[in-house]
Length: 434
Ligand code: ZN
Image (cartoon, rainbow, N blue to C red; front, top):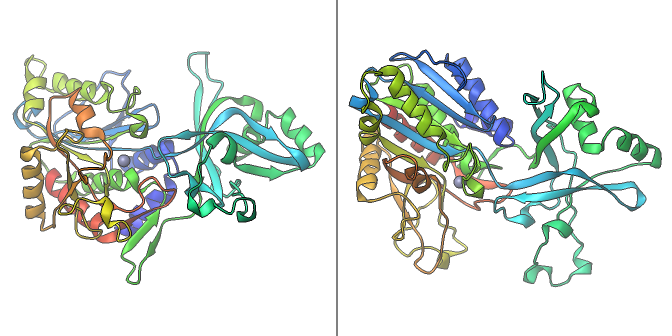
């Protein structure tokens, strides 16, 4: 199971590639892709999925009972991770033929972890389609190192280890090559280095690329580390580890009949506040669920509301594991340990959706699955983060819980999780979907 997670993480180098990876697995498992523009044909026991913006995906297995009777069982997560996005007209042609890229920060990454690493590029490009309103979308992943962000030598900043403020615009421009005057002239004629590389990879002409959303990613593949290989280290663990745990559970359980309709919701743009059409703030999930109810029970105008009232959501986003070097940052009695099971997240000021009801449900599921359950609560003087759960309750009046497997170095270019926690998280998710 951990080998599969590692392969999925390696293939999912950005939000778009993550959704592509998930769709590939759903296709293999016999799920039918539905287009929101079509009239849907759905039936009890059927397996379906909907893709939004190529970067969010919603899979569901229709229950044997009407959702109005048995509700939805939803696990939500997100496809995006903090990264550096390449701006349009990205190339900055510098002295000696050195070409850098103009980039923008996406989400709240730990910036200095991006220095001096081999970086590659992935995302989507738009090319000319049948008409102006319907451009063609192509996914692309260069899959090999093409850039690096060179750090300033310590000899130019002896105080670097005492704290080093970073400017994305000045300090974080990745270098993409060193070229002759002739090569640079050729790149300029083809629309720049980025478009040239991407076009070559896709087998198209650079001038066919109308626009792109491309990001940088660290090429280091997922590895197991620790003396007993108990840790998993990879980019994008937050939140693909949770997305893939929900996928693993759905694939394992979709062959078994269930009265409830099981839903895996992977949103985009959590790292920037979920405020897009494919984010948790949008009506995208509510509209899918309402449509399912209307299709299955067209005679019952209350079906959707009854379904939501008897639903439950696990909002799955990684938690902070206790870090032995920073004991003072953690709550004295509620700091989850890596490898000791998934953590329920609680916040008195309701940054998390967890209440006693939601926590009780999740703890009972852990008990049934034979999995240890931990608590994450912020140190009372530390602000902490937020996640999907509460944002979704603005769209759907759901009961639920915020939880996540505990990880180290959240939002670092490379994060660390536990192999055991992944296995345990999948076990709880399977119990929820069984
Ligand atoms: Zn997250």
